[in-house]
Amino acid sequence: MFVSEGETMSAETGHVTGTKDKDYDVIWFVETCLSNVLRLEEYAGDAERAGDGELAAFFRRAQENSRKGAEQGKELLLQRLG
Image 1 (cartoon, helix red, strand yellow):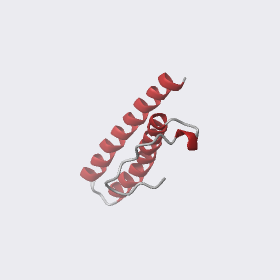
Image 2 (cartoon, one colour):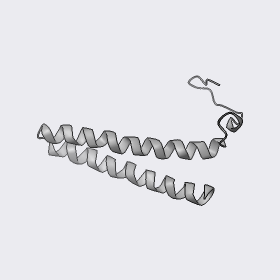
Image 3 (cartoon, one colour):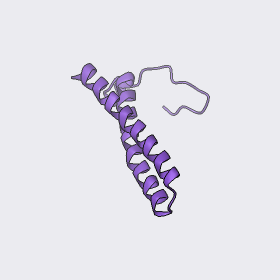
Image 4 (tube, one colour):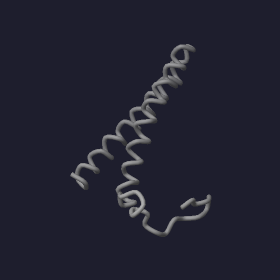
């Protein structure tokens, strides 16, 4: 089911995916955090190549926060699904 901006989905869709929405949400969160870690590596490298250490440090801090989010999400998944 497509949900437009401003709308909320009120029905559980786990019957479609085979995974409860709340579990799917945590899986999605972990994947997104890990994707951000990879993307921010590129951004930090771009800043470093341009000689902008301040911006590179900013992206590295953001990268570390995404890495922490992914680790916390993985721990939560282990507790709930393991």
